Amino acid sequence: MKAVFLLFDSLNRLMLEPYGGKIFETPNFQRLAQRCVTFDNHYIGSMPCMPARRDMQTGRHTFLHRSWGPLEPFDNSFPELLKTAGACSHLISDHYHYWEDGGATYHTRYNSFDFIRGQESDPWKVLLDSPIDRIREKYHPSQNDPNSKQNPYNYMINREFIREEKDFPSVKCFEAGYEFLDANRNADNWFLQIETFDPHEPFFAPERFKEKFPTSYRGPILDWPRYERVTEPQDQIDELRANYFALLSLCDDLLGRFLDYFDEHDMWKDTALILTTDHGFLLGEHDWWAKNRMPLYEEISHIPLFIHHPDHADKAGQRRNSLTQTIDLMPTFCELFGAEIPEEVEGKSLLPLLAEDRSERKAAMFGYWGGGVNIVDGRYTWFCYPKDMLGQELYQYTLMPAHMTKLFTVDELKSASLVPPFDWTKGVPLLRIAHKSKADTRTHSYHFPEKMEDTNTVLYDLRTDPGQTTPMDDPAVRKRLKQELFRLMTANDAPEEALARMRESLGQ
Image (cartoon, rainbow, N blue to C red; front, side, top):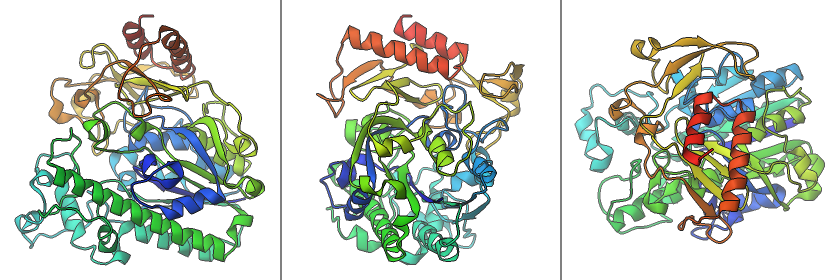
């Protein structure tokens, strides 16, 4: 078997033509859908970026036990399992979070990897002799906050070295992909993951794509929305959205060239192709930008998925309504290469769904560590939040105490105690580390509970209210979803305190 996994970051499903997007054309996503089975009810699991990737690699939800952090020693990782089946896995990525403290054990699971530099706040280039103030003048004041957790100055400096289209990290990712394929496409038993940070913010695209989306905005560079409510004047809102459209158009163009390569070398006959994203992104919908701060609306949680398999080429252009999740990717990759799927895996291989559309799960669970535990059944979405977001009993369970960009502090580690294994840690006990400094929101990332807002337990009917604008109340639906939620949490061997706060919130 040969397989290519294309992973984009922050794809808003509703912007893609195969999913009904009408704002602008995405002809190559449309072209991809004609070659693939398109999944209409595919959802996230753990949020945000690295928690989503831990779900992808391990095939199980991690958000009830852990926030952003490395793979753990007891985790099952699909690239390592592919090795047991004699397959070689190669990662090409500009997603620089893999090379931070909180992601440092992911890329090393692959047989080989290629890191493309320069995205967002990647600490790549240095300009000590060029005063940062002179560079800052090019950017909107909202992108000049020295206290921002998003490190805007690294981006400003990196951008000084991205002058032509060939310099863009996503372009380099795909070029490295062609290099791999030129050398190896005639071999067998390989898995290639081409992963780009785009269209994640900041929305920086080559000028030829930006020209397609003119706005009336005439100020300094404005391409990085804050993780905040929408308060900007209309011309700035239009500019931010236009820059996302331009970057997504670049992604569509890169996809088109990749499909050309598949066509030119007739790879459809012997190579699987899977494309998805880690999560979506709000572009002003629900009066919010981005993710993490607000509820996991459809624009964030409901994501695209396309799969081509040579053995199911006759299904090209078909769609599937089955409810699927990010955790299903890992067992799918294992089955593709004949690798054994470990008993700890919660996900289900998607390969049977290529043959026929059939129900594999009643409901899907997703969320953030310390945030809501949300559930969707394909018709209804229920956001279930703890009653007391700031006062809740909250612990990290880990043997790899690292946050996103730093190790756990000594103060945090002083609270650590060794606790018995969960049923998925292979008999390995864990450190239980209390969540510290709950009142000091400056010390916490946007995906921690201190930063979350609109934390109301609400139910939406996606059939009558796809935009999730009007909460509804149906006791029978809530009762059924509550049973499913606790079943899924129990199957995940959720910590007792997580179950307790949901019982308190939902009345069980």
